Image (tube, rainbow, N blue to C red):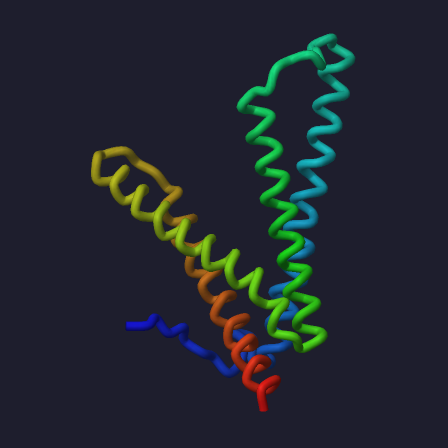
Length: 162
């Protein structure tokens, strides 16, 4: 049994799928680009402050914090690159450039659902957490954006074959 993604004909604001996808793409590029720039500037300022306090020793061994920071930067940069691919594919009407973004968002949605499951278990144990509501909101929002982009992807792909 194959899983079928719902298809919509218009975006939520009543605009076309192409315009909705461009809005989603620009939103991701500016939001994620701003986040990438913020993290980058934070690390530069942090290193500068630690250097002047004498707290930076560049002969330190590899540590988990460095890996976490680098992984965060790579993740943000990957999101930025895939969102740029989405925008390029939307403007050029080429379905191949939609695929990296769709795969990334599928992963984000699956991970979000997994996190909701973890939060449900945590709440069942008796711990109070509000993160479940934020995660549910994120899953719903990402799912809707995925459906809009996937609908345009199918439309572009079928028009390319005809």
